[in-house]
Length: 179
Image 1 (cartoon, rainbow, N blue to C red):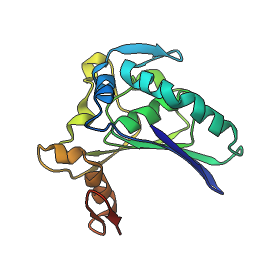
Image 2 (cartoon, rainbow, N blue to C red):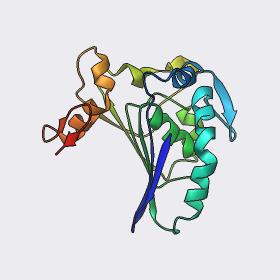
Image 3 (tube, rainbow, N blue to C red):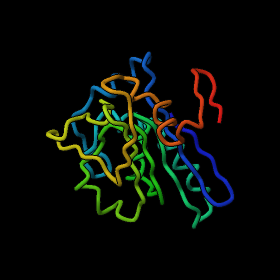
């Protein structure tokens, strides 16, 4: 579910998105009711998914040199996990791509007020609109909208986000990324 890397001046945790053919991961998406997680109301399925890797990540983070910048990032489900992980260990930065809503923003804004949060979303990406706001979920951070494809699941694909951020200077097929 996650990859940790540490460099000279920063560390990063990157959370993977849901794989379409993984039914257990789809189950996490569907479990959209709120549950208490570290004192906050969060998406039940997402918090259960994070619990599978959070202890290992916290061990990795304990080894990071104090004062280094720390980035959490992820696409789709991975973006939701990045937001919830920030409730366990606060990073300096979060950047999500095509993330569903995972928390009630007004409830966690105070604890994350010093975190630079950027939410990249594509036009017509259905995933960014779930779970619905009437359930109490809200997005966090500064919104950066890129052009997606009109009314298509292609708007949610990671390749759409990479091309939207990098522009036409990138070629992507199913196995390779070329700059």
